[in-house]
Length: 320
Length: 272
Image (cartoon, rainbow over all chains, first blue to last red):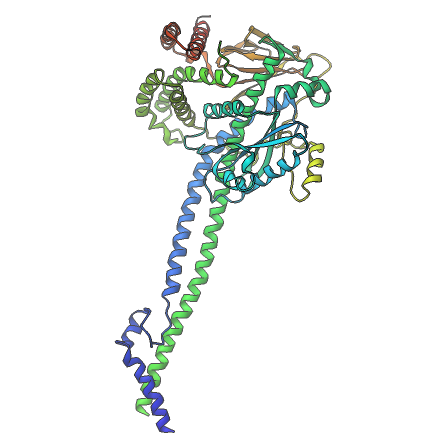
């Protein structure tokens, strides 16, 4: 019995003797000790805590950057809201117009980490594609922004007519958007242009919106058939030789104005979405850090207790 | 004769005008900096003074380079001049949703038939402020909405008369005017209210006059006449007339022609 106990004691003594300076090491630092030491390591948890803290700092900084960018661009977006209202007042809004050639202009962001706004735009674009599909009809995409391109190129590669990226390299202004609109109108045949973007309602809510711009021929057709555009004929035309020429200019002007407003609103929504995404990310990181701290403390205390037990039982074995 | 799309013409006009207007805005900013030292600070006020010297040199160089670099310079100049207007007003929670949103029911129905699981996107009709209906008698005042891409200069302002620079000449608009769609050329817009007359020089755009005596004027650039520099106008006019005579391609001729038109309009605005 005593021999067995001694053998047990011997084993317990042997273990600490093998590792270099075991007692001191367990008191100084809970390093990942070589084989045979029974102290539980807290290194893994500590590494995780360090990285989670860094993530929290980074996302907090990103949130502040997004908030300051949002402030700058929100005033501009709100000022540009008066731009599309006269066109809707004159021509009305006909999203359910039935035409042969639809072009869907999807506006998205270039950078990620902005929540779900890009996926929403892409989902709606695909749904519009389905809605406007039919015999003898064709629907094409024009994509502004890297994120929508990445998502749409996977299954609708042949339908993408034009894609434009790096829109926000220089601060957005009307001239740039006008050049873009001109490019699109020159290269794409359309009967109706549908612009899909996220309208900035407030810092936490973004409404997916679709604006429709009709080509001059479709406008004439709708005006003749009556309905919302019916009283377009009652308008006198000043300037230009023919009504058709004025309607052509009007359609181009309408497209560039509506596109300008849409691009600004989408940029606003992007910053707002990024702000809330980064905010929830830093909050989650904080919670994770709390849980990891508890685990860390428990692990540390457990390893100290284990060492103490070993020392005390070894000492008591020596005495008694 | 080369065909230039409407947007292209507007772009050329903006580039020509922005050189003049940028120096005007710079002068205004300097005045503002001197006067409002305690103004809630837009930190951008300090940088423009050193930058504007190089921007002017840029603007001068821009006229002799190709179109694309002109566009880039213009967009940078415009962006800088726009971003430095301090707007310190309290922002509403949501600025433009009217009380009773109207929805296009046919669209919503056709959407729900094909895609039942997703909410249909909103359309501009939902966000439109409703317009007054056509009254039976001619109202006494004209309601004017004058919008630019960067601001709404006048929104629902009641005035007596406006004179717009249509392509067919100056057109006066009184309450009860026939509904009209007018294409505008670069010229002077004058707003008459009682005895005050406010004059703006507009780049081109469109003007819609509706049957309910509401006039919508949409332009890209507008500057009050008293802020235009006469000497810059004369210099520009001489420069573009010279360019017109030395132009070789159709595109260059068209651009130079537009420049001459814009500057002569500016000239007559200042003198007339």
